[in-house]
View (tube, rainbow, N blue to C red):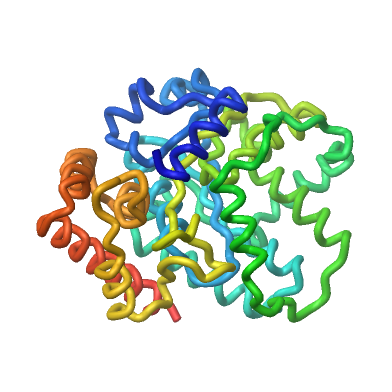
Length: 344
């Protein structure tokens, strides 16, 4: 079992999460490989029968890496499955942390153009920045008196760090990049950012008459789902909150995750030739669970279930057909990079 797969299993067990197998609409849509945990199976299983909004977001610490691309493509695939999807570009988070507002706005517009170019349909959902969500900001002001995380008991499971968590912590400690702060920040800005983050999920329940919200987040953000429920319980908000969590994309070699802030993995600012070489040199066949390339294929692609089944077999065999499959995916990533770089 790979370090990341062991992490999934441990966190699911500690928190009472389920695997996604057996959720009919996910299986019919061929999306099962994208997700590794469900927090609130009954709610997630009922999304086509109740007024549901799927809430997603992408961070803006730099150009997208493949994990970020995977989140956007997951939103597009969920739309194709018939769901109402909200994709929020979290632009105020870096601004509150001191990044220049003009720079934040320019990057947010690039993210918006990129998501639209990949196929996100604003007629079947919402694609917005936090700054543009004035109605959500109003809800945040109304619900702010109920925001008191110091009084909320954590739902997180107890236990030692997993090997994957330790590797991530060591990676961040090793990173010596300079701070990106360019402007003012404050404790008030941090609190505002946290309140707005929670209200991005609660606004559909409070102001839009949805019965339930599904937080579709990367597995490393699974704690935001119970955190949102605690905020809901403290505030005058009704409705169900559940989580549907995507797999992570490990970095190449022994790097535990792809990350914009760390610079691990493949960024869409990477030159196509360099990107192709990274995949060619990965030599990560044999174990699909430990293969950065195959894990990226499962999340950051439009590959269907049948093709992923075939690629998994080829990865296990680790022959020339897997090399060809890896090369084909590298070409796809290079095309994605071309799309991103065209928004500059």
